[in-house]
Length: 275
Image (cartoon, rainbow, N blue to C red):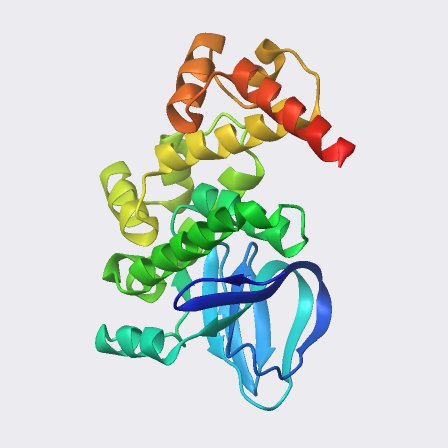
């Protein structure tokens, strides 16, 4: 199932967690490939090497020849095969958007949720009558990415210590339950606290504290959906100091309490199983 809007069409998407090569065959329905890297990785594409940091993306044009993606070392990345209309490309050109550069993914948690929606649609897990949701999700994803490309604060090469900052951010999202202390991070990077806050905001468009909370909320949603653990245990596993603070942050970010969220997820799972 394809997702098609007025200017953008999502032909296919997938995820790889390995090394080796992947071939994208020519198809008149698609003209661009979007790669979103979840880890530090090196990609060899068309005799050019792309060194991707965690939470970065690259948008490449496709042509009549097969596109070979060579990943020498294990990497986690997602890809989307897209068709962008001439009008959409003209708009990007007018905004002086350079699609061939590597850029930082904005709002990883938001992108994660959008990705899940799009994967469901591609795998035919939603009914046709729900296609509007898929269209809006695709438009929102492209809007986020293009705003990021067009915004100089996200240009990784312009931020000092970017590789170290990206490593910190990657560790935060892979270890959400850890008790992260800003001063300890600053000591490891050998930079002052105010300078760290300034660089982090310039690199990612958010603060380190906000990323810590976002990573914990994402982990708590996973535990609420996939386990029957009590709320207090989930709160501790996710690194929250108190249950009250956890519930307050969860409702602020998700729009409902952890208990209500779990109930909704369980009901949806039952509906899916009956289909």
